[in-house]
Structures are given as structure tokens and as C-alpha cells.
Image (cartoon, rainbow, N blue to C red; front, side):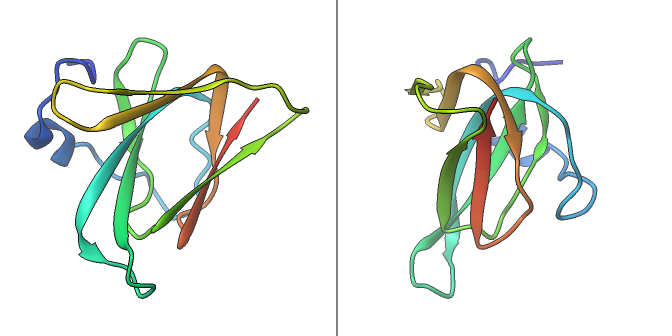
Length: 113
């Protein structure tokens, strides 16, 4: 399987969605942010997100209806968040800790452990 570092936008379009809008997919290492070409009811553009495992492989798409990404921290403050830009142009968000995802809602939440 390709890692997100080797994937094209077309490859990302083929990543499956998670089963169910609130299914727990467990912990993952990073999140790829994919801008979409349609507006949310708020007037802001929607985004989708791909969870990525420790090996850099995509797990699943998490939400295609969100116009906001909210960061929450489990277990206190002091987490370091970083963003880089993949060769295909999408942004990758990662932390020094593992991440978990909230349900697929208008405001999508991720949590750092």
C-alpha cells in the first residue's frame, strides 16, 4: 500500500470512508486535510480528513461535511501540533502523540492523547 507521502490526489479520492458517521477507528498518527469543492451551509468550504497510521498509510476518510476542524487535548495541555504540505498539495497535521477522531459532524473534532 502507498504511503500518504507517495499518494496523488486521485489516490486520496479512492480512500474508503469509515463505516458509520461515528464509528470509533481507534488511534492514528496523523491527519490529512483535503479541501473540497463545495460549500457548507455556513458559506465556508467543506473539508474531508484522512486518518493515517504509524506507517504513513491511510486508514479511512473521516468527514466530508465539515467546515471547521477543532483540536481537543485529552489529559492536559502542552501537546505540540505540526502541519506540513504533502507532495500532492494536501496538508498533513500531526502531533507528538496519537490522535483519535470524533463523529462526522459540521464541526469535526480530533483529540490528542
